[in-house]
Image (cartoon, rainbow, N blue to C red; front, side, top):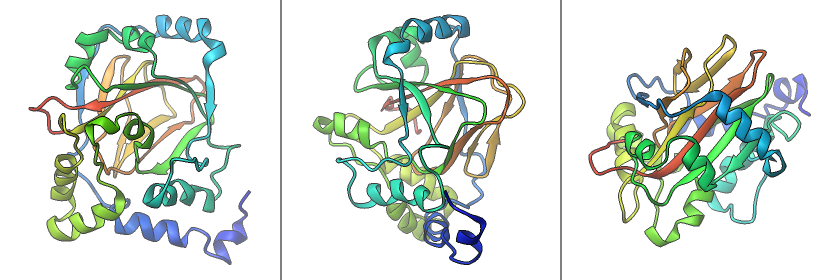
Length: 255
C-alpha cells in the first residue's frame, strides 16, 4: 500500500504520469465518445438472474495489477504502471464472467451485435458487476487477451507508444481517428463496445479522455475507441452492471 510520502518524497507516480502525458492520457478530447445505439433486448432482472444461476463461474479478475505470461513489451509496461502508484488486488477487482454463448444470447444475439456495428465473428464478451466502492483506474486498453485468441486475423492495435508519434504528426483529434483506422485485422478494424446492463444512479461514472459519462439507461451502448485512456467508478450504493464486447467493426463504422 502506498503512503502520502511515496508520492510527496519519492514521486512514485512520475514515470506513469509522464507516460500518460506523452500518449494522450491528459488530452482534452471533444466529440470522440458516442452512444452507438440502445438495445431493447437487454433486461436487468434477467441479467441478475443469469448471474445468480452462474455464480460458480464468476471470477474476481485483478487484471490491472496482474502481469501474465502473455504480457510482453509495451503491454507489460502498461499493466505494471498502476501498481507503481498503489493500485493492487485489494482495491482493483473485476467481478466477471467471460466469453460464453449465453452472454451472446443474453444481450440479443446476432441482431444486437449488428446494431452495435460489429460483425458476428471473432467476438469476446465479458460481463462485469462493479460493486459499490470498486473501480477500474485510469488506463489504456491493450486488448491482449482478445488479440491472443484471434491471431489468425493478425490483429494490430495502436498502443500508447505509437499514439505518441500519431499525436506529434496529426494532433490530438486526428490522432484518435488515425488510431481507429490503424487498429485493424485482416477482417477489418478493431472495435470495442460497452453495454450498460443497469440504469445509471448517482455516484457512478465512466470517464473517457476528458469526457465524463453519466445518465445512461439499461441497453445504452457506448463506443470505446482504441487508444482512448479511460476509467470506471462505482461510488454509489448499488452494483453497476455492464458488458464489454470486443470484435471487428463493420466496414462502414469508424470506431
